[in-house]
Amino acid sequence: MTTTKGRTIDDQGKMNNFAVEPKVYVQEESRAGFTEFAERLNGRLAMIGFVSLLLLEITTGNGLFSQF
Image (cartoon, rainbow, N blue to C red):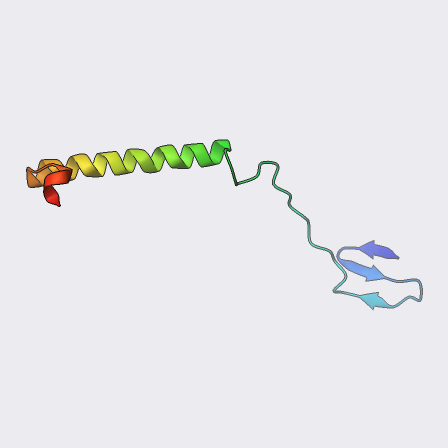
């Protein structure tokens, strides 16, 4: 088989335009478990939650438990 510019010609001389294989991407770091990505995301979400609770307390004048 000969491949040139995305065209593949087999042993019989027939051309196959659709035989181009896609490039495979493999992630080096998994996105599950205690990874750096998961810890960074968890920290950012915790900071957003903490700041939103502070803003809630400042705007209403009541604490979180008094809201309930």
